[in-house]
Amino acid sequence: MAKRSRSIDLTQVSEWQEGGLRRFQDYLVAEEPLEIRVGGAPLTVTMRTPGHDLELAAGFLFTEGLIQKREQIASLNEETAEKPEAAGNLVQVELAGAEFERERMQRNFFVASSCGICGKASIDAIRVRGIPPPNPEFRFDPEVLCTLPDKLRAAQTIFGRTGGLHAAGLFSSEGELIVVREDVGRHNAVDKIVGWALLEGRLPLSQCALMVSGRGGFEIIQKALVAGIPLVASVSAPSGLAVRLARELGLTLVGFLRGRRFLIYSGEQRLAARAPAGAGPRERDLSQTGGEQR
Image 1: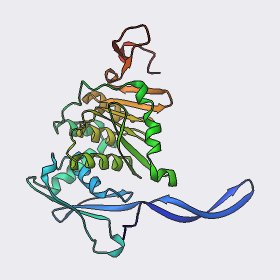
Image 2: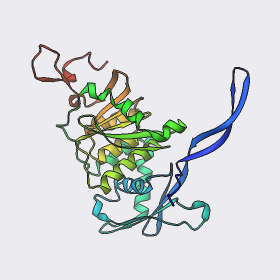
Image 3: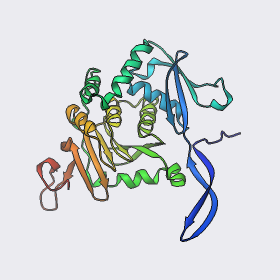
Image 4: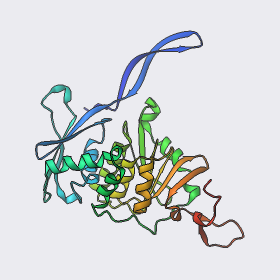
């Protein structure tokens, strides 16, 4: 028997329109807690949309610095929870060759989430991990970049039925969609992609661009940097701290990517535009022309 999808809920709703009321069944995106345990000890609980939970756990461990490579995961399994109502909401991880200090990691989680307390502390916490700068040779055609939102939207199967969740899409330098993941949390969608790449042996993602729905927050940029992604684009605005982190560590950050317009907040040298007809075969960077990014 095929496993029932738990990514979508069905509910009864009433719609008021032009003075009339009708009732019908509507789809909702599911949201449930996922507990991640390492060596039998609870590590964290995150609210997520069920689906690709092993990728989510693997990506979380990698982007939060518990592991540095695939080989450090000895086993990764969905476990049966003690309570029936929690079934399917528990992932058990066993590590090999990686010391797990639960108290130290909890302190790190606090620092990583402390941007509301001290943005400098948050950026310092990323810097001390020794994450290498993203690929300086990576280039992406602005014309191709403008096609990414439509490609991402077309691949969002759950969003098409519910309209209530975010997506992250990984694209090649030619603009081909490699993988897409959906979740109620943008950061979870990114962790699922990073976890997929980790389990598939494709890290670092130094030749890829990441497109996210919604805004580009600090957590998104942090996770992209850990995965080696050189370019992150979003359909909305980034946060101030995300821009500071992208500029300091050399990531290309694009916001308000809609239609044929976007804003470049950092790393515009990676957006190489083709020279117009008659200008010769050479490429030029957007950094050489003031009006192209508007």
